[in-house]
Image 1 (cartoon, one colour):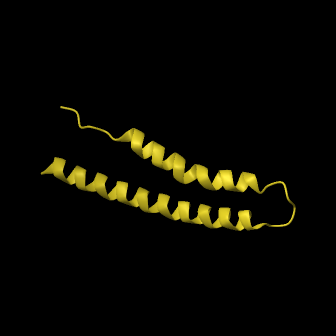
Image 2 (cartoon, helix red, strand yellow):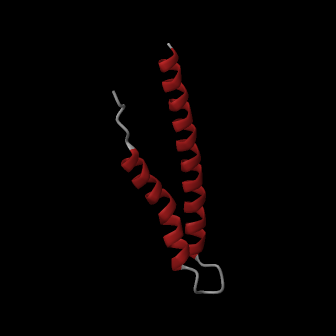
Length: 72
């Protein structure tokens, strides 16, 4: 029996988390002085990095829990 995977929602979430800051940074790349959009993009990127880190930790924990259920 195979276990169901939820790969596509995770991939979509990662694309949204990682893509939004990049789009915001691309919007402010032209002007030489730092702009408000750049500051917002930098904060968004930092928040996205934190969210990605938490998601990776949660995935690791759930994988560990799944592996433990297989052992029992």
